[in-house]
Every structure is written in structure tokens, then in C-alpha cells.
Length: 178
Image 1: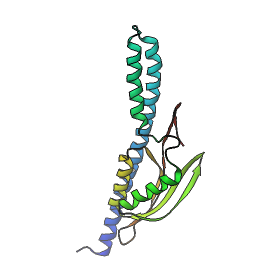
Image 2: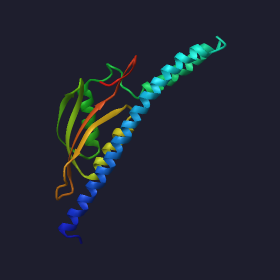
Image 3: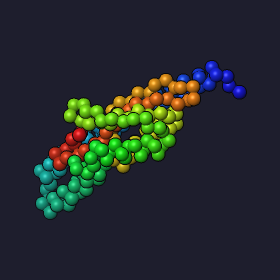
Image 4: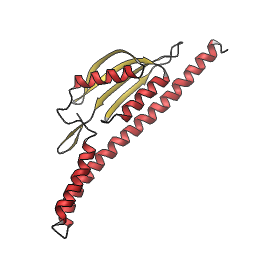
């Protein structure tokens, strides 16, 4: 049987582990988005250079179709400009949060540098928070966790979590973060 100090230390250890995992998640998610943006830019450049480097003009339509398929595959992970409103996104996130067992205390829109995020104040344990981050990462559309703050755990093992989340939009000229 664990005494209260041992329980408190285990809770703190759990939060430290969660903070490490969250940091790794945010780092890798940022790299994934950068990688996708680079792929799209490279694909567009590849199309331009392919047009200039093809010897046989009969090859040109096939090469263009092949490159267009690559672009379309990457574009499916982004929302189209009018595909979702920020309020629909907020409702989807609310379902995702509650579906992972976290308690949603409140949320509000936050506008920073011409971009709207939703700031969510949640309560949950380390496993529930990890499951939410995994659900965000595994989402078929790109979502961005801009910021995440985990406050020290309570005696019941739950922690207060604040996170800013938004979605990624693709336009016809390349990537455009909304």
C-alpha cells in the first residue's frame, strides 16, 4: 500500500513522463508538417523541371498525370479553404477530447498572427492526454498543436492541461497556414 507521499511522487513522475512525451510529439508533428510542405514544394518544382527535361513529348502527359497524383495525395491531408469553419473544427475537437476521456472545462478562440486557434482547458490523467495527442497525430487531416501547458497534478492524479490547436489549409499556390 502506498502512502500519500509515494502517491504524490508517482503522480509527479507520471506528469514528467507526459511532458517528455508531449515535447517529443510537438517536435515530430512540426517536422512532419515541414516535411509535407517541402514535399509539395518539391513536387511543384519537379513538375516544372520535368516539363523542361522530357525528350519525348509523348511522355509529357503521363509524367504530368503522375505528378498530379502525387500532389493530390498530399493535398488530402490538408483542409481545403472552405471545407471546414473554425466553429466546426471546435466541435470536432470537443468530440475528440471527450472521446479520449478528458474533461473539457472550457475553450475559446484565440487569434495570433492572422491565424485562429482554439485554446482548450482540459482535465485528465497522463494516459488520457497521451491518447488525445495520438488521436491528433493520427487524424487523417493535419492538425497543429501550437502550444501545450500541463499544470502540476492534483492529489487525485489528474492534471490541468491547456492546449492551442488549429487545422491546416492548402491553397492552389502551395501551403497556406490559416
